[in-house]
Structure formats: structure tokens, C-alpha cells
Length: 209
Image (cartoon, rainbow, N blue to C red; front, top):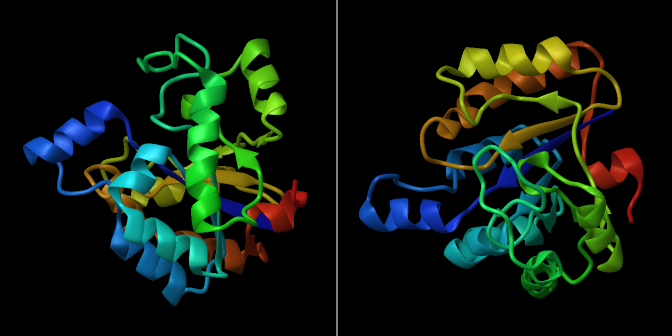
């Protein structure tokens, strides 16, 4: 089994990009449609700002039994710095609570998984997540779609490193370059299945927290 996970990132800067018309969208309906067409279970880590920006899309994902939704902080500010240029969150537990409240309205039974923005954490961050009753989840395979310039690069990066038990991180963003993920997905899924690897939700792979 392999868990395909997709981060739905949104920062205040990304919101400003949308407002200025610099990026069309940070939600990729083509990717969601491909996941459904290929019948691929997936875990979607959503930031609170993303849920608020795309409430109908978020609600549709949360209601679809093919998917599960989980916490990716409120505004994608880092829980430990330095972290790829991200600013540090002022209140880790508040960030978690705000997003959990939004997720609870979408799906009260969602698994209590959490993914650190940028994957950055320290002991204080782990303590804050544990205090909110959440289970942090990282990854062992980076799909590379956040910075890739072609779908083939995403496919190669993923399939070159995936194995049974892997957790793959990709992105649900629709703006370039992460908007290439929908074009890479069919080849990724085909490559997994040809190797006898089965995409599943994170809960199926590691158990539900």
C-alpha cells in the first residue's frame, strides 16, 4: 500500500496573489476530477485559509468517501524556523484549533492527522500538536510538484523513490507550477499499479488516530 497525500496550502501572501490576479487558483479541479476518474483514495491536508477560500471545494472533498481530510495549520506559517522562508506562527495551538474547527464543520469524523507547514518542527512544535490530540505525519517521498516544470519530472521523482508503505507528498494547488500535478497523476497511478502498489488513504496505511 502507498498513501498519496495532497497539501492544500494557503498563506496570506498567496491570498494576495489571488486578489491581484497573479495566480488563477490554488485549487486544482482537474486534479480532483482525475483522482475520482481513476478511483484513487487520497488524504488531503488543508490549511484553514484554503478551506475559507474554497469552501465548496473543501466541502465536496470532505463529503466524498474516496478522500479523507486533515489539518495543515491555519495559514501555513512555520511551527519551527528557519523553514523555506516561511514566517513563524505566533500561536501554534491556536492555528491548530482554528483549522480543526473548520474541519469539524466539514466532517466531524475526520482523522486527527496533522502535517507541519514545510515539514518543519522541533520539540515545542511536537508538544503543541500532541496537546491538541493530533498525530503529526511527514512523508518519505517528495513528488516535487511544488517546483517542477514538467509533469514528467513529477512522475519520475515520485516513481523513482516510492515503495510499499510510502507516504507521498504532492499538492492540490492550481497555480503554476503545482498545477502540473493533474497531468502527472495518471502516469503515477499507472506506475504504482504496474508495480503491484495500491493507493490508499493514510488511515488505511497507518491506522486512524
